[in-house]
Image (cartoon, rainbow, N blue to C red; front, top):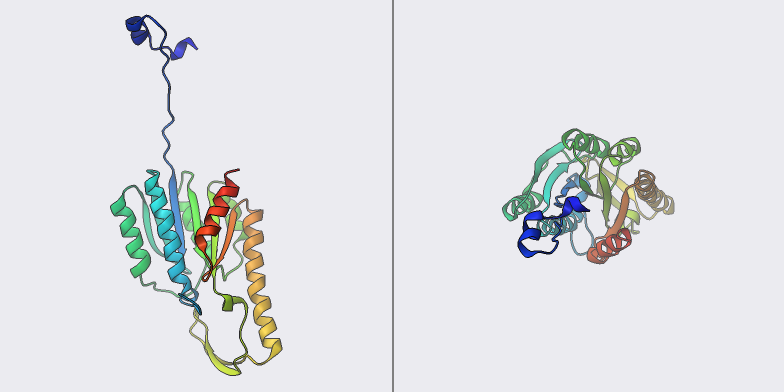
Length: 239
């Protein structure tokens, strides 16, 4: 195309030179991290919160390697902290510090409210990762709306005893999000069956809701390698 010819250089060297245009690549990554009380649970190597922090830090550092912006939303049943997207290592280190040290006001969860906040503050398209155990429901409608604008991926981090309660007899248990304590007969097969059924219901709701909303869904247990899960997901997505 004659419009791409650099006429000054062509005249100087007496042969045609063509301008090559490179599109500037600048993406924005938003990390949405659940800081509700259920994240402070773990029965193997570490709490769910620790694994969530590691994954979020890995994603944040990958963003600055690509010279992309990265921002952070910490949420419970309210927005606990919002850090607008910026570039740079010092900015990412601030994000990681808040991931490690931040003390939330609330222990409850509201995923729909977090998505609504994202929609209000992020007007341009972003790559969004939501990290949570997704012990919540009733967010399908909000996810669909947000998914029309942003590239959403859910990363569900869970503990094996989120889904299976061991037979320990009669034990006092505390709800991590409400603080309520009650005696639970874990020797009862019905109790264990209902506990598992509710956990699987929430896990299925998460998986199906994200897929119906055109979003990606990753599941990783705290005692598994999340690196393999992430690499497998991105490899499949890049096809």
